[in-house]
Length: 338
Ligand code: PBG
Ligand code: ZN
Image 1: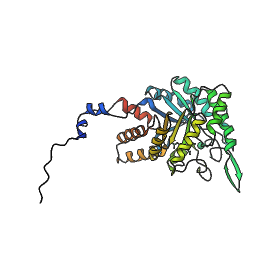
Image 2: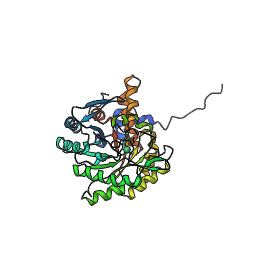
Image 3: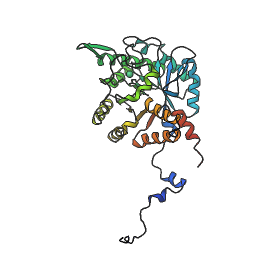
Image 4: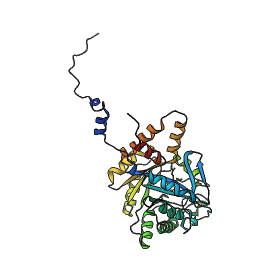
């Protein structure tokens, strides 16, 4: 056996900065703060509805009378914003209850604003929860089949946006992936005196299997076919940059990438290319996987959630929409004893 080469002392010892909690805190690069979280709420028509979503343990469909409590709890934990999804009583071919002045989301906004005036109310703007066919806009017959009519959807999206703003929404978040949606909504809002209402565009939304639990939660599964004719192909990263550029040109104030975990490379690319606030949506399927594994005792929920959200921040997300928001707020307020 040859004897090992004589070695000097190791010069580089990254562990020097890892030995003590104070030192680790001092050099930490990324933080996760409650002020960057948005909590999604599913608002159900009717009364006395507080129905836990089977595939999303700990998340509920809530009727209007239950919102007061939800708003106060969210605000008390320091979570600054909610995003609303409506489950209306009636659906039709064009989703007309989406722009009704007494629609479920419109009424929810007023209740939330009264219960917690400082809580920001973002509204998801789409038609899949309001159409009887479950697609994100009205249908057009073409070539013996149906497709979503992009340009008719634009008109209806603008109408829905004005209705949300009129009810008091703070931010409008279109999620339907229609071409030109941001421009159409911006134009509609401006024409009705809502030029101060920002648009958070779901600019980069992939056709994802991770939305499965959400479709149960919001009752928005497409009745036939899928959404690949309007949502993005999961294989495409450069196209994400084109989508982002188009939405910025049309006046988007903030962009979103969705889902989060399988697309952190896209988050990073968008963040590096465009200097605009960037959100990610930690979607229902991501939540469901963590909850299922944690319930089995296979992973530690708190550790895994905080690590995942920190990863989203490290990738470049300024804002995180997450069903874990209230838990995270509690965990950040009460860190574990060292
Ligand atoms: C509707 C919409 C979806 C989500 C947010 N808005 C689902 C879809 O496109 O089917 C998904 C959110 C989640 O999975 O948590 N356009
Ligand atoms: Zn939709």
